[in-house]
Length: 321
Image 1: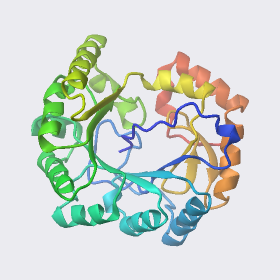
Image 2 (image 1 turned 30 degrees about the horizontal axis):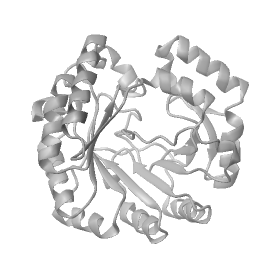
Image 3 (image 1 turned 30 degrees about the vertical axis):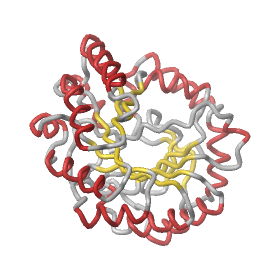
Image 4 (image 1 turned 45 degrees about the vertical axis):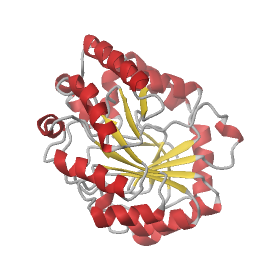
């Protein structure tokens, strides 16, 4: 899924003994076939971390006092140890967000999440109508996603909606935000579509025009004003290339962990800076710091900026260490 909108700002990451944030794709299995999936989810990749490896990683997160973890997939609700992972993180007072399509959240699951006091649950809702949402999220069920929001809110869970704009749903952003407010969600998060993974493969049928984006951001500004003090409407105005250029100067104090324990430098680039099956989290953090000055990384990033089609290479991993 990979719909996270979290950024750790321009903190000088080199001064830190550990990252401030872990974005962890705990599995690649998914019940949907979303046209825009950054991770090309829907199957199990070889050698996903087993339970022992997962809990070894969790112990390191706790030992390093990393304050915030976001779990995604794939579809994290399909992971057999999801709630054990969540319980461990919350027991150690680590702030936790889960990003999900919502289709496996019923009243009982929502109540369980409510008891664990997550920072938030982010539901992907890519249309104000079932037909629009399900055109992007193949095999998806709009009604289940909306019901998940209702169940979570009833259980007292801080609930967010994330919306990915495409040619065929961007016009529904105003209605979607109104729907979110009627449901009682905490906030709506959106921004330009990331040209990574399956989105890169389907770019011609997904990418909105500049005129579409102009109307989109104008509507967002109206909704920000309309719901000021009532509901958060947050949008990140930059595309993945602009984000990459910024991160080359100001790397985030965060790590992106894949289901098999490999750690990516950043989503849009193919570089792997560590492997939790072979190295400690502290060692990988040191690798991460060094990687940003690696000539191979700098050269390829410049090529991507000049030719965004190279973003299609983001999931063809290149080991740096």
